[in-house]
Image (cartoon, rainbow over all chains, first blue to last red; front, side, top):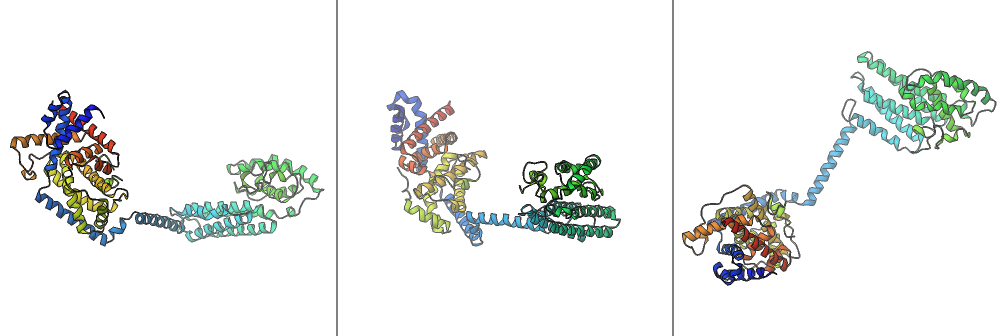
Length: 373
Length: 190
């Protein structure tokens, strides 16, 4: 403590005891200039101790407080009290959020073609396919989703075609088709039958929709595409079901088919949708199997991207499926490894990769609540 | 020179809890204990008796409104409750200054036990206004220290307990606050 502070302390004690500022300053004339204003402030503050509320003001303030007490009691009796508890407010907030989520979920689940939540519903209903443990599960999940979209389309036919429902249906059918390529022949045939049933339903919807705003045409094109998927799957269970080709077939067919595929059919695949399939003809070239030749002759199925009844894409897809089923060395690079085409696009080669303001602020009581704690 | 006996820690906790439950007797007891202390604090802050009275009435309304949120510090229950009330008072005074409320023209004679000469009253009124303006330049803790010390006669120990600081820190704050007030008042007079 400095000398000045010590003198200030002494003087303030004297003032508190009743001594005047002038008398204190007279004791320390060398500090008079600095002491006086501080002592005047101390004296002015000390004078406040003689003040108290006037009786009317005191009575009025007390009456206000009592009214507030009564009002607070009434509010508590009406349930405002429990709301004041923080944990209950938190619980109520969580319940409100949960309710909103459930409401949103219910809206999405009940949405119909044309509703804002329908695209989300379509995505959600296809989600199980992503978590399916194997191709069979994936196929079944995709077909279930596709059938729901078909049911929605059937329900809404005549009220305008829903592009969301149609696109989701075809996407599910295509995913089912691609997953089914890895399945054994009988199961693949069953999937093909289901896809064909989808195509037939779409055809019926096309007939029912008739000429209404071109809806019939949209259904018809979708039916063709579903039919194409079915057709391609149907091709599968032929010689491919055998463990391997006969040695005598290999030289005879590979020599004739390969040129045909690479020179005449590739152009047909150069549409944007077909781009992921372009690698497949290359895969076929590294697959010295006789099964290629017969399949090449069976290529007049509609193609996924163009709906044209032929093209290398169909052939190459089938080739891919055959490759996974035949235990030949030529096929192994594609099975989960970095071999040509293998692992790309999740296709058969993919091995399942799968307040307070120093006193400021209006909320006095609120921000002050923590004061001193 | 303590003007009123301090509420003890043992007394304050049951009073606060009863007041929360809406017991009028507890609210009255708290009111009786604090009303003049808070009034003097607000008088120092505003320099105006009428304003201080109004704000004091408002403070007790807010006390009832918000006492449910006040959490008693078990280590120093009485000090924490006092600090909470003074914090509300500080906010009310700050709101008053922000709104630019003006001082009234007179200090009610009834507020003084002994009435000085009118000229003295006028001088003191002017000093009170200057003091209130100067207090606004201090920190809230400095204000509490000088008002508590000189207007309430609280000891450094009591102030230290209320502010949660050491006595040395309170003493140091008091020196700085007084020097600052002196310098502001001197400037005012020039």
